[in-house]
Length: 514
Ligand SMILES: O=P(O)(O)OC[C@@]1(O)O[C@H](CO)[C@@H](O)[C@@H]1O
Image (cartoon, rainbow, N blue to C red; front, side, top):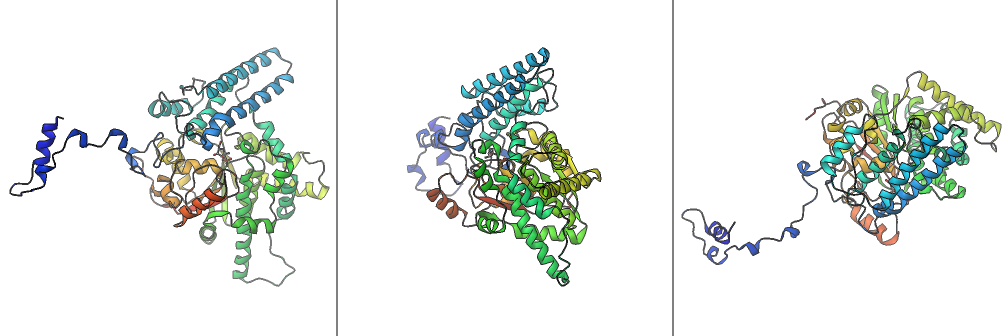
């Protein structure tokens, strides 16, 4: 557009209206803002949000000194080195040449992936390895991340993509498609958690009942007692999430023990570290479920081993006290973010509790308590009270803002739940689009369609804070975050702080697909 044309536009005015100032203010091209000054305003409008453009600014690996940068540049290559060591350990114990050669090819592919990560290579399409999710991954790469590399793609996508590429290293093999390079570590950490494991099993192996030696309780006293246990177990379920293999790789046994401490005093002490705490609203919701129908609760699981064990103790309580008649546990189809639960981890935990000899130092009473609890949980499974499932969507690069559109069957399925509990940091990142939303942002705004779509179930995020995104801290959230920024370096990645956030959703409404 020429300057003259612009000038003639700027000078036009409504017929009969004289504007004395206009003549002096002729608009020139040079008056237009520089393209680089045009900043998007946040949150982006829903129509302009996509996996490479979250509602608030994305975290990306090239942000020097960020956790994203440290993860992409250092943590992920280290994780891959450990994975390679694990595969080589397996090679050492093999005798069949066919198996050895095949596994060594997987190792080669892992080394190639590590080199790509370290050299900040481009994100390429996933190879056709016969897996059902190839199309979904490649659609996302093609639409939003074409020409992007590990550092300038969004951190969440690049990191998830790395785990799919790791999967590809094995699915392209003849014999090793189901090999889990993290399995040894996952089992090992559980076996090093004996203190906390037995503290819980000794308390909760016997079915819950009110103390019959004391005077009978009224209905409201009973409810009050249940509420106390509910509060405690919600916290146990929460702090179980601070044990995360991808971060704790170099922790000593003592450090793990102190993180897992479940004693009452410790819980009271740590409650003040829950920066956004909707546990009262959660209790109200759960209580209503009991009054109504004994509902269905879904756990979108995070870590295997000790965290899963804590989740199960919590789920057991919900079943025994009649809050829920069914619990559905959602795990991952393949090894994911190091310690996430797969079907094999799920089976391993229940079976090791009943049949295993993991804890040589434990007393017979302790071992029996673990067996008893494991037997009860396996019985729940047999009766269909507990159900384990693994939808492919959980292992994609999509956030849960896209769950409705990319996995409509899963949304429909979850919409029938009375409460969906999302465990851990990664699930929280996916709920909130992993972006720099302001700390006071209300949780239901931060999770988009998982709260606002018709039929969205009540959603609760139970998460120790281990990465940058922090929302739901209430109206003073900016001050809280600023104070911590000032006084406690690394408070967003230490796992010392936490949130328990609830969205009521729009349950009961008919789900609509666009
Ligand atoms: O989901 P989790 O186990 O609570 O945490 C996963 C995690 O360790 O991995 C990511 C970084 O690699 C972060 O989201 C987070 O810190």
